[in-house]
Length: 177
Image (cartoon, rainbow, N blue to C red; front, side, top):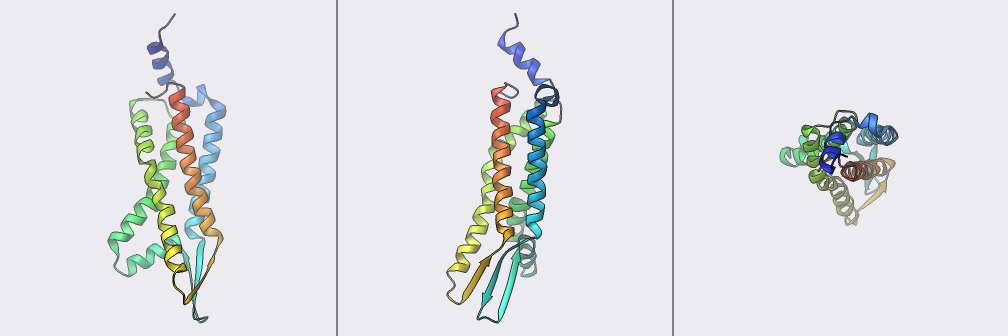
């Protein structure tokens, strides 16, 4: 009868697609849906700001980033671009890679990295919340929230859930310890 270490090693070297096909399929479908939702949200309008009934400006994530770049706010542009666009794309790509590759030490390190960096994905929500709060305090402006905001927040939350569920599932099955 093999001891626990032998069983852990056996699970750690198997392909998750073979060991847990339904879980892998569910994670893959959810990740691809989240990826599509996220990309759509980048181009969709977050809100429209109207000042004095004459000036109107509709803002998306990409248009806000381009505005920062046009205004010379390179540092702020880089921070928001890295944590609001690159990091979520990286996180979803890594989760798809983990569930569709042979388990290895490299995969284990990737999962731990995603787990530890997962808290930073809330920066997206924080940035959007700050934009909304700052606009709401302007007494001279009226703001209308659009579907892009809900798409963006949904993609961030789904991404966090995929990461959390995957980490717990893989730890539960002794794939990474």
